[in-house]
Image 1 (cartoon, one colour):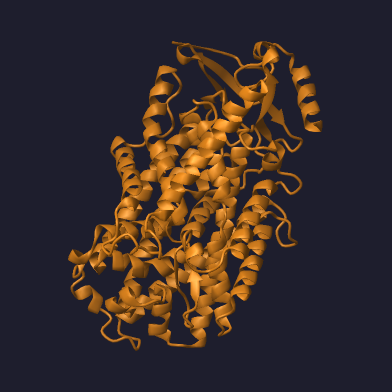
Image 2 (tube, rainbow, N blue to C red):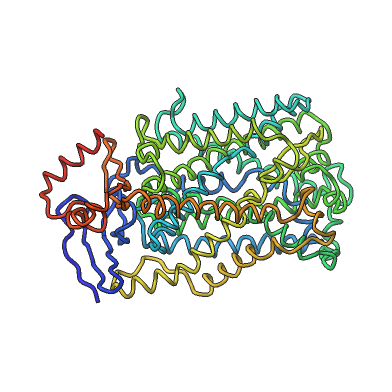
Length: 601
């Protein structure tokens, strides 16, 4: 049983509904992105009726944000390791198709959640907050802390640095690589946060990112066309169809560990299909737009990946792909062009692809971290939420940059870095370089755990909203798709513990193969300990209770902030504030005065 009443006369607010069972209160509000009202649990971050980040994410940007993040180092490095894990050319093609279907299934889950909360950016941050509101702030805190801890993007910066240095024909010293990587990532961050002469606002930042995305598409199309030239017998490659004569040969040699590792490589290569969902509140009519253009981006990348693999297999013999220390792209270029100036030019294009990937990642990740801050579970709320002075989330940008530079400078090459990002060989001089495969091993367990929680949460949120008599969403995922997504996430949670054929030390690193899985669990446990301390134990010991309040910043941003209310004043606070943390029975004019006062604090 539920009832609805007007929430207030404040602009953008639609309706408030209170559900009798469980004392759950939903607040419905409209944003400025032409979406239906967002009905959400009152504990969630408030709807920003006018996005302080603007509405610059249109069809082209949605498509290219996802494509730019997907097409990076993965397609140029992982086909050889995927072939090695699957054992045959035929099975590797099947795995690329399975990866595409997995992303479609996961994307459907994202889209249904977006249909429930169309005026909230941040994707997983919002989905977990609203699906599991109790214990209060547990999921937001856990996701927020691990998002900040794992927000570094050092791998793509290192890849770009390696390619740039090798264009000159030199391998580069360890510190030359680090310095170049630092400069590359700093440039990407500056271009993203509009603090440079070239880019002044969010719209122009997206234009720049889109331009880089187009270059990345043209690069992979060049590889594909070159592959067809090879198949036509117009290069020095001998017998270009050899790998396709018995495409399934070697399938029986694949092991469970190898197949699982190949699946991680596939997931990494498609990583980014969800990137535009992080900007939902910056998209006009987000559900329809994401349904069309995010799907189109994923499908386009799948087609490009399949033809790129055809090109690689046409130019490079299978046994060389499986056993060489070079990346697939390096082998391909050397077989077709030899050691020539053309190879260096192509290496520059791949370096540019890594640069575009950095920008796309920074854009999406900054929105997620900003949304974590808007939930109030991170300290110094204004640091995370404010978009001044450039109209961009400078706080999240600064944290991402700092952690990335720390990883670049402080962590040496070798196993210590491989622990987070697989190592391999790159370019014609075969220097050691770090490739960010499998979305960083450290994040495998946390990501799978959160994705499984979201997949299960689809049914939780459907049930709760039905009992609350809330409107049906604009889009609902098919049950078979949601269940398929659950099974995939369960597989990703279980299989990291399955040992390789050679024993406990025969994995991708020189230490115990499942060390990264244990560390991933350790990160989640640390997040849980942090939550218990600040949300329960410290308040109990200090004699106060945490309550949330809504604050408005001068740039138009709105956020929750957690307030320490002394236990002696708790009854008064609860009597004068609603479940969302807004004052009740207070005239609109007085609320506006209070909000202005909050801005001055």
